[in-house]
Image (cartoon, chains in turn purple, green):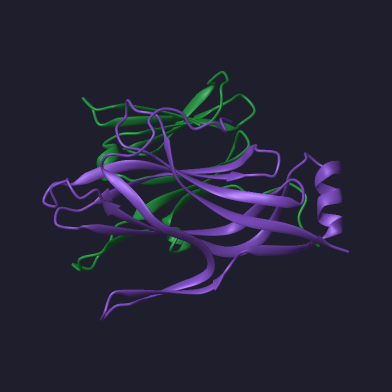
Amino acid sequence: MSKKTTGGTQPTKVQCVWGHLCSLTSIDQERNNVSLFNVIEQLNLPAKLFEDAKKAKNVAIISLNYEVVLNFRRIVSIDVSDPIGVEMKLSLIDPTGKAIQETILPIAFNPGSKRLRTRVRMKTFTLTTEGDYVYRVDIKETPESDFITVLNIPIEAVSKS
Amino acid sequence: MNIQYDSSSDSKYVQIRKGKIDSTKKEFDWLMLDYTHEGEIIGVEILDASKHPISITTIGDRLLELSVVVAPKSESDIAYNEVNSDDSNKIFAMKPDFAEAA
């Protein structure tokens, strides 16, 4: 699985304004405000988990409900009346730099929408060893282009004996 | 994952990993899954891809989950996409058989 992001330096259509991992999000339907609950910065895990991961296939999967919430915005020069569709990739990068989990999904701005929220609900977290993990957010603006990294969300996995 | 998109036919093919395709299963008119002889999914073909946004999650070179991306229903300024908002959005989900936390 590729861990390298190639091509381009900056996106030209869409920018990622912010992104977080959290336990739960809630959207106020009346005001369209989003609330994030329990932003996840660190996971405290039993040491045995990492030992088992080494014995198994070097990968451990834990049951964890969380959301990756992202806010995208059109680049100012793009006409709001035009629809925009890009491909997004969420890669979970382990402390060794290896992409151990990937999620791809298309994101689309409707005509007239300046901003777009994307909430990806996850039920598992993949681990190899303790240390600093990164949820890397890449976007591909055209089918012919390469993925461009637009955001890195850090999360630390700490072993607790 | 390797993504190939044909704009002329609006079809997308996602190669989960390299391998010999033994069979293809038609899940829906617009969704085909390629299987190896061992029964593992190694490719996903999506027809009318712009009308059928699909989220694909892999762990290593194994497919973990296929879900439908839910489009926003509200007409508010900020549109939002949701993935896995409920289990009914899932087309395929593999139960992990790797080591799990105690």
